[in-house]
Length: 176
Length: 375
Image (spheres, rainbow over the protein chains, first blue to last red):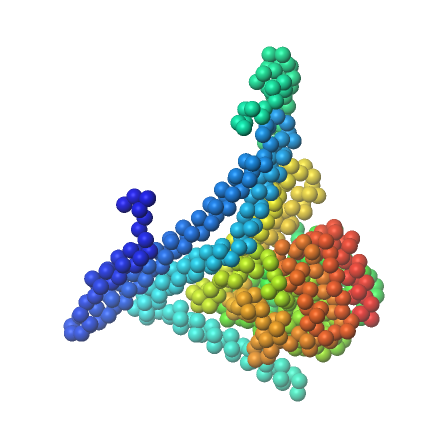
């Protein structure tokens, strides 16, 4: 495969789906427990692969936007920069022209809806990848009979609510 | 046109090298001297930056009145014999640290208010941990700020305080006042985030496509690294890079270097933001703009800005690239106060509170307004 013919997100997904099909095992009979565990683990890794492929596509879009802004700023710098560099002022002017051109191009980019969407997608992909890893660790914790992240989260929620109720009760008693 | 064509023939070093040898030699010597000088400055900057963590901030004398897992309540030592009767409770934002209001003695917001005879307290928010992921605005507004207000009222034996918030702290102060107005004498805010439909800043733009539900579920609190990413998108070249060139150029100016280091320390001293708070901040305030519509729910109560009737002072910075003036100004139309004032200043978000401009132009007016309503 060459850079001119990169693999598409659809092709990635097809590949992962094929793997998922291939790894399926009988879900009844003596293999039941192993099959269930193996299938769930395999699914987590396949989902992780899918998310990484999606992130790669989104990162390409993200860097393409950055690249466009960079090219625009570079062209503007070349057009407006002093044509000769004989004095200190020439260098100062070049610095000023370059700073202004890059500032305008990138501030314009960062203020655009297109960039905001691209950044949002990459951020979401990062969170998805974190979540996939957490799911895998959650299974490991369960297998080792350790408290899992979701169980700790439940406890945190309860503690938070209890603290609030205790505080409200204390305030109520102070007022009496 | 080629670049060669644009080069002046007579003065070009290439053509005049034979005729003006000494001049070329001088130029080369000068260039070498400058290079040597610049290298010296770069080396000095490197050494200073490596040892910068010891730089002092927040030096105005104070006592810690309350110290909890979430915040410290500071009471600053008065600087005049008779202070105004109504104490001021300063509510800082949840982004970066509160010491920017007391960065250095000659640019300290707090010190200036003290010197004008005001009695100042400040809530110094501590860094949240992963345990705090479910903490919301309800906790900050109706628990932490409310507890601090009660402590100040009790300590000073007064019924009401002046609530004085900055940025996100200003928004929380407005929320608090809408719920607990009986405890608030005046509301004085700086750059509050109120109507985000009119916020044209990069931060507002980036916030619109963040999946905060997923964030809360997977990583909990909003991490500082993401805040750095957002900050680096704000004036990335004029402020992000040019400031380091300026530092090298001014490295022998102790006052310049001191100012630079303190601001730089503050800029990157960023705690995480509690997941629950960040979700409300993005979803309710930025994405759905519920605050100005009086539809935002905190706990089981609706924030209704029109209920605010206390005197209001709203300070906005015309050059603010974090909270645009159009986003802050609508607070004055949203409240029902009859005594309300909107002041515009030709400076930026940080310049409004921690600059010579702020000491000379902003604080005298703020002090005057507060003193007239603190007897």
